[in-house]
Image (tube, rainbow, N blue to C red):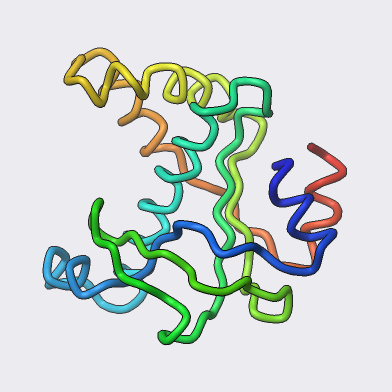
Length: 154
């Protein structure tokens, strides 16, 4: 949430690691239509957000995914993990499509997952369960014009 506030105030999101419908994601999710592929990419982005939360325990435990329409030339496909990309240029506010954010009720589940992330990455099954619970928690959709109100709520 603090990063979203900073990005909103500056009028752009900086070039960061992100998620997109990449060739590897398409290959992995062969049967999916475009909407299902975008949902799969959103789940990858939610995991990246969870990793950011794990790195900073002082912030509110809400995953945030900013959906944007970015030109292919501004994106470098990483696909490790599948669906990840690196943005090569800032993304101005006018290209933002929506924000996907956990509601306050997800705080306990997301907090547990952020805390468990290192252990899950080392194969701990209980920690992996905490991540699965967070992944099963849907993010709420917000129009770009709702972001200031969302930021006020924290």
